[in-house]
Amino acid sequence: MNHHLLLLLVFSSLGVGSTATAQDHWWRGNTHVHTELCGHADSTPEAVARWYLDHGYHFLVLSEHDRFIDPANVVLPKPRRPDFILIPGEEISRTSVHMTALNIRELVDGQAKGTPTEIIQAQSDDTRKVGGIPIINHPNWQWALKDSDIRPVKRCYLFELYNGHPGVKNAGDSSHPSTESLWDSLLNDGMVIYGVSSDDAHHFKTIDHQHSNPGRGWVMVRAPELSPNAIEAALERGDFYASSGVFLSEVSADPKEYRLAVDRPRTEAELAAGAIVPRIVPASEAASTAVGWRIDFIGPGGVVVRSLAKESASCPRDASRSYLRARVTFTRQAAEHLEQVSAWTQPVFEDDRLKKVEIEAVRPGWARGKPSAR
Ligand SMILES: [Zn+2]
Ligand SMILES: [Zn+2]
Image (cartoon, rainbow, N blue to C red; front, side, top):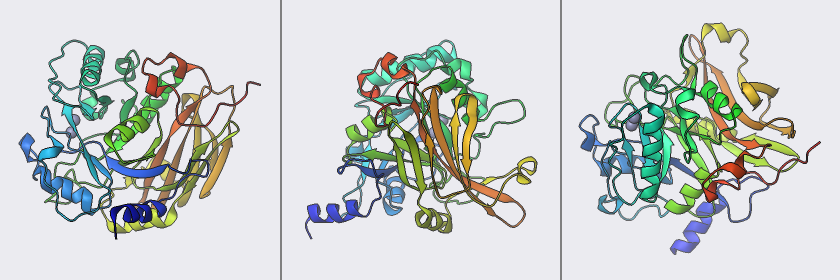
């Protein structure tokens, strides 16, 4: 079988949204992982890449701490699936402001000093100078970043909404907001910022809940081809969703409505595979949480504007809401508690914020059209 035919067969098995163009496909990837080169992870770049190759991912960023791993030097087994690429990158992490520099040509030597805002800004601009795009990592790790640190930043449109490292407190605590609340705060204030999910895996040899293992957080990116530039462009225009365990079969928005559908068989298969670490539903939420699927459409201020216990749902777009995003949650009964996995889709904007962004590629957004003003 030649490669073109093989690729065609692989592509035809991938679900795409009903309004996606014929050449769009969904690519599964992880933007954040570590290797033994950092001194506190347990596997070689080859072994790390091999894990993702063997587990059906399409792309991986070997985002080592302040080191540039050239994908050309990472030897993958042959023959292998043709639909897997390494995207060059690093994690800039000389201060507590960690950022992924994705699709860079060379190392960004993060020497920036100053306030958190100044460091994010300098690291974002330095990333773009070497051809890449910036992602703000795990704002709740050691409570490193507040919404007020991120809000003034220009030319940075991605942050880690979910990070699979057990030391990262995505859900916040009694005195710190969750990353999802932080996101709504930024969106509510007019920022263009999209939510990424990643593994931040360090450990491939010891698998348990205390270690940072692979397969816990990923993005599904919609792009016409699998290449570093196509993935980068789709991330920057928000044409992807973040997942901690849920797969979707439709993500679409036209001028009238925002539509989603879950991919139940694929989600069930992923849960059965065992790499996922679901969120344990706290006792305070358990009484009001039902087992099964829920699709929440969320508007300004994090307000849930429509919530349905269904596997597919739509929400009318409304020009009076500055943004609309969605969260899909699957809840199941475990031995002693309820546990959840989610997918988070990106906001569509009803105001003119996309016109104000400074990077041309970000401007179109991912949705098809805008609602007409009332
Ligand atoms: Zn980090
Ligand atoms: Zn990291």
